[in-house]
Image (cartoon, rainbow, N blue to C red; front, side):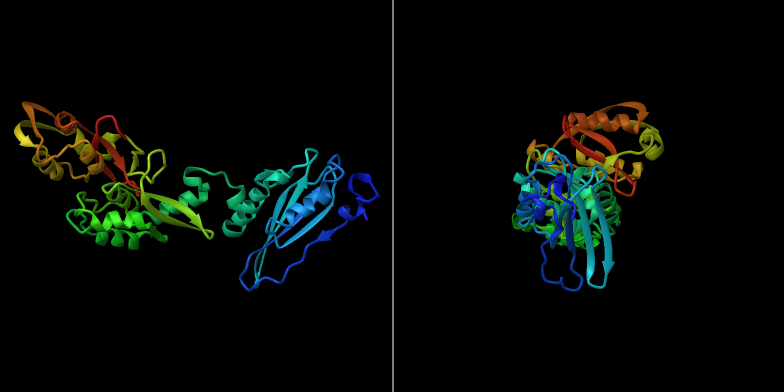
Length: 348
């Protein structure tokens, strides 16, 4: 028997191999064992106190043993008919903290250790060691989410019942979609969908449609799988975007926006002008109806003008939208398809 920190007195029991046993896991279950080394220089009572603490952490088994200076945290994975098993090798260092791959915990943070083990159980090694990015997802999870949202929308949305559109979009998305009760109530009672997103991706389309009703879409991990939740949007929270910056030069992605024409617009509504420009530019227009309604901007009521001259479509767009207190951006969806995003001045 190797003594903890070189002692052979009353701490020998804590230094010995101590294992908490539990019933055998069910078929397909995930089992997690903790193998903890007490590094030289750790406080004398570390082994005993950590053993008592880790009994409450939710592992299926715990071993605490004396360690050496070369011990390193790691996660070992094995798979069998009974399910996946993880062995988490951790080190209690000289500061009396438990160091594991992707985490460092004090005994006062047993809740954090429990959460760490739950994440490992549900998301695997990448869930606890992978760098977290947007929405708390790992790079791999975020890439998988974007891929699941790339299915094209093959039906018209404008003027359709919002619940019908929401259900169709959910069917297109390659992961589970949950609509919270408060969000569903807004959809059910909402006016017909005011935005057209046919031909664009299900992810960008869902975000654009839900935005019309003050709702947002977020991916999250549940039970080891990424899903999408639709909720009432709140200020300061991150939501799945209505498109992304173009990954190329605007003149290459949307060349029609830079074509020249002779133009003269006199006392037409903004809706009439946009309807005339849409087939010429051959690119979808997506209007930010949420902010337009908030700022009381009605394209059917705002009348715009443009002096007779020869210019390019982008300049026409900028001038007539400004008269309505609007602006435009060239964006693209998850599949790289460009579209024109029309929103209020000064807002993303």
